Image 1: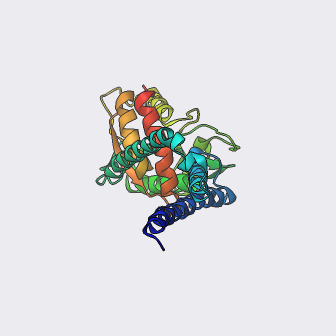
Image 2 (image 1 turned 135 degrees about the vertical axis):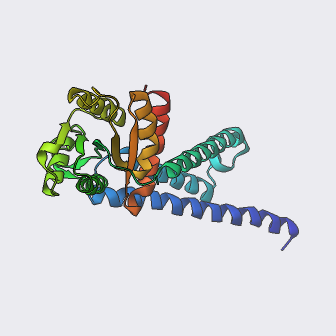
Length: 270
């Protein structure tokens, strides 16, 4: 075998390995989305994004494996470099946001507060999603440990939901042993920013701010706390965070969804 043939085979072998790696990553993304959809996870960006990214990676792997012009032709060199540069920038920004999410996900123990705001996280019909169930269990524990605190449960009705999140959340907490008169529903919010603004309005209606600033805790998922703190400052609420755990198998989806939500909140939620 000549030296030239040896050199030409080396890049092909490397391209084949990269192609299989891209295909494996793409298949993992599609399987993740498919598994969560099959399990009744609902339709949201966190569930759909791995599948969409997986499809892109599969196409990239196929283009490299089968030597499509877009992947190997010199005529496509500049678009390829622009595409790869954009992908690298996205990965860097995603990693930076994940660092921020992790940094805010483990707050210290929350002291006793006058109020607890519990943020919604979706229903399956009239049943809390797994993420919301974890938040409600955390809120129930906090309310049992602090019998003087009252709660605002915040969440409207979204696609595929037969009742508002606020009604489902109050029902869950009552079944968990929290007196119904301690729970005030806020049933119009459809976003985190609205959760916080509307919950503040509920607190104001009770006269909670009449004698100064009340101590208010917020119960939400750990990955969500960075954005909640950001939006709470904009809503004029000082919140003490209480982190609810997130199922490990939902963390990749939650981080992808929260990445987009953080970018949106930084640019638009004022």
